[in-house]
Amino acid sequence: MQTSSHPQGIAQLAGVQGWLIDLDGVIYRGDQLLAGAPEFVAALREEKVPFLFLTNNSSRTPEQYAERLSRMGIPAGPQDFYTSSQATAEYLRREAQPGIPIFVIGMDGIRQALEKAGFRITQDPSEAAYCVVGYDNRVTYHDLAQAARAVYAGAQLIGTNPDPTLPVEDGFIPGAGAILAAIATAAGVTPLVIGKPEPTMLSLALERLGVPAERAAIVGDRLNTDVAGGLRVGLFTVLVLTGSTRRQDAESSGVHPHLIVENLVELLSLWKRRFSL
View 1 (cartoon, rainbow, N blue to C red):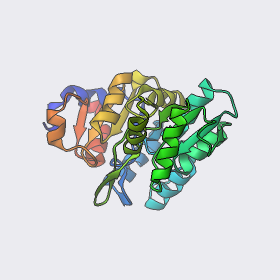
View 2 (view 1 turned 120 degrees about the horizontal axis):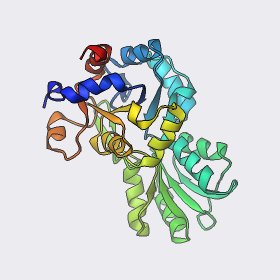
View 3 (view 1 turned 135 degrees about the vertical axis):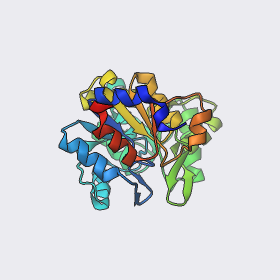
């Protein structure tokens, strides 16, 4: 399945007025910047096309992501990012009372987002109203046990995202979804998931982007999160093959993106030619 087999998808690029751009596997892989990323972002800025870097990874704050991307060669500020941590905190801000205690497995991203939204992070599983689980590379068996105890005691289990793995330079490592699955299995519950492919994060991101779904696009490397989520809320979907998905996976999948490209170099070329295609 080559890009040329999606002529309708290519033509639809002309109608895109805003972008949601995944990070891991699209802009970078581990600490390696991927081909075409700086140029694609620069082209959007030059044309004043609104965009957000949208990531299921809940480990970093927007400030940390901005510093990292700027260090890698793509100037960015915190306002350019929307993370599953921010979406989780915003969801809870709309659903729960300020100051409510939350048990958290996660790193700076989710902890700071919840605290900024006015919630209290507790280490006591018996008092938690919610148990929020994100990516944490320091997680221990004790952490898993305490999270399960929180759910046993009545806390609602919420996952920032369902990603079972994270792409790194030399392969993959377990992601937030793997941690969440362990707790959900132990507690015997089905978690509420905020990040892609669930619609909550995408809908909140579109609010911030200021572009309706039918005029926005998402570019990602995962069929089961980026593409499936984008299709669910009516976005134009672009799959890049620089992360978790191989072309043969896309060919055999029941999830069909509007457009498949090798990398952002190819997408940028199509974007620049979009009104003549």
